[in-house]
Amino acid sequence: MSDRLLKRLMLVLAALVLAWALARFVGGLGGPAEASYDLAAVAASELDSVVVAAPEDTVRLRAGDGWTVNGHQAAVDVEDSLRRALEQAQMGQLVSRNPENHERLGVTRTTGRRLTVYSGGTAQLSLVVGRRGRAAGQVYVRREGEDEVYTLQGTLVSLVNRDVDDWRDKEIIQADRELVERIEFSYPDESFALARDTAGWHLEPSGAAADENTVAGVLSILSGLLAMSFVDDSVADTLTWEPPSGRLRLVGPGGTTLGELVFLEREDVGFYVRRAGSPIVYTISSHTGGQLLKREDGFGS
Image (cartoon, rainbow, N blue to C red; front, side, top):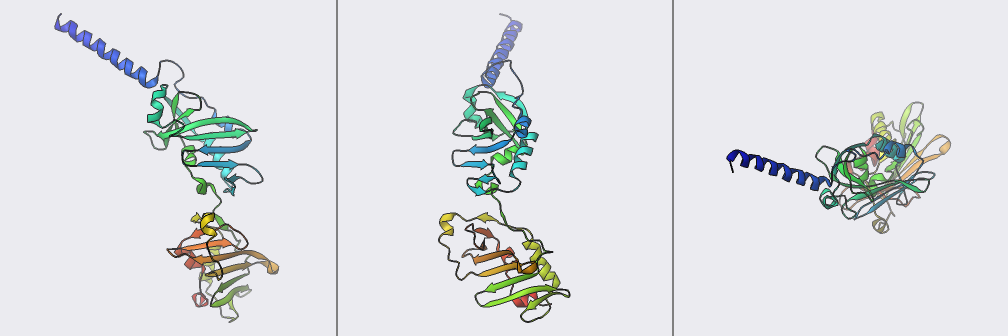
């Protein structure tokens, strides 16, 4: 056999090996190169609920008077975020048709996160979301019951990877600063109030003028105070709130209570805080707590 013929045979063999490897990775030739899951149509439907099931936990988002997540009040933008993420999700190229690759790509029932979107009580979409792909914000996905694996890119990736607390409503209080006419501060050893009149803010009962910039800082925080995290019920039940480390009561026109917050300093760092009458306990940083829980001499002009 001549050297020239031997080289040709080796090239043919190499091509056959490459074709075999590709066929094994992709799992067959032919068929669609891109998925047609029609995520935009799912986004336009009347969403009932969305479930993200993972080996370690399950997130259950349900529609109602307001959306809830695992029984807790969800953030107000949940539905908009879900619809926008579904509309803008970009399904990419086919990666594999071979189920032997599911484990490696993280799209098995035990390694992936299963996203199911319901409308009218029926599952409109059920995807297994696996490991991250090569591009930023990209993951591997497959439809439940199918072998084909595709890439997916967009904000849907980050939403699927959220835990329960990430979906919850973290707003502790949102007070319209224009409506606040009085802020009452109570501590175990001191009580005073900030009151507003036509001349500006002053302290009661002393009557001394309060520093407007300091008051503005407190009002700014109270206009949109967000929690760092939530306290588990098992921990919240052990907390002793009497006496609290501090208490703030916001009063509006006609003496109406606009909000009342109770604070408890943590042993490690930061503060526990809850709305008066509510069992939900949040955490805030030491810095934020210190900016709110000022003593009377902290408002001196």
